[in-house]
Image (cartoon, rainbow, N blue to C red; front, side, top):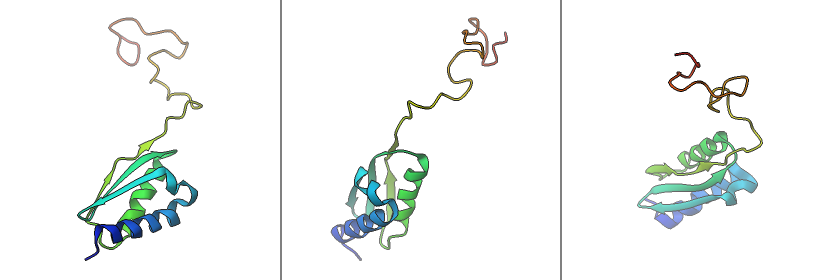
Length: 101
């Protein structure tokens, strides 16, 4: 069985291979074979790929993926998430998501 230090080195190497230059954005701790990931990435796909990289390392008992996905201020919120109608007005009080009573 690998020590936590050996496991951490193996996971770090796998993350460097998977994430390349973004690997330094990922925090990594290992305790009793449980790997905890932290940090901020740009996309949900990057968060998922980091967890998959950890799963490939022999000796990992569990993964705690605490990584966050960076908010994208350059993107508009999805329609219906702004609390406004398509014409920019707020729906009347008591109206449901469709603006109907």
